[in-house]
Length: 377
Image 1 (cartoon, rainbow, N blue to C red):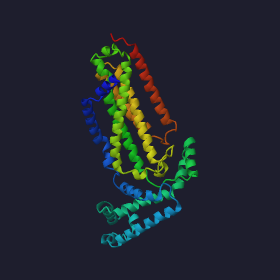
Image 2: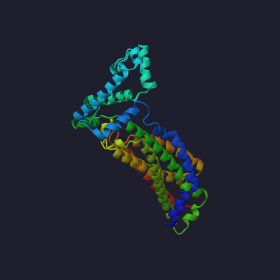
Image 3: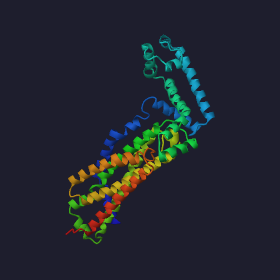
Image 4: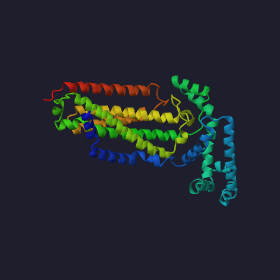
């Protein structure tokens, strides 16, 4: 146990922690910050989000006819307010716009009406008019809810078609936008990439460092013998788990400032998105975090296997660059960002993780056996 803590202490050296802090600050501002600072990203996303935060607690996930009619009444009241505003605006009269409906149907060939449209939406940027457009999107979504699923059924095959038919028979319709889901999918892909890079930097030197200092001969000839290798592996896995947990906590705490908790209890189908498993958004977040954590542990194990067999630091960096490309372009993009996506076969993600697990565990077993037989004299 003393050796285990000594190895942990070497891994969590102050130099390594400073390097990791620097790398994460750079990656945060390069990759992560945009999806926090610019969420919702402009208009009408900002208005859609405000409306959803207002109506989700009232209506929930599935909108019945009575709730839809209540929503339309609120929309009509806003239309009346818009009509009053336009009637009292001399510039609207000059452009020949007398009602909200005439503003919606403005003549693109009429320069005055073009200018007035820009004035309302971009120069004055009046919230009520943007909110009306956002609410119209929800109304259209409700009106086309059945036809939308029928269209998916017509153009799907096999399991996907059965899934859409089941959604139609169970009346699982969409009413809200997929804005929150799109944002989270980008966030978790970038978060996974940052964690992968951090783990690779953190764990890669574990075995190579001692070999370059010619410490392995002393370690393997000690009382503990070749079991030192196993202790190092356990220390590396524990360190990977601690680092991953810390980074997940920090970045998810930052993500919480997007204030998407209003959507946590919505099932995925209600957010204009199709997934094989219709879990709530909160459960989707939990599954995504577990996927990142599991992938990070496998990457830590892979990094230790690479560290065991490479001859020098240059080769280690070269192999890890290639490994990062595979992890980010493959694991983060397809297995983590697209978790449960219906646009992949239902077996795609489980099979991907199974192959990744078998390859990494197989490699570490082979490397461990090689290390047990290696002559260090």
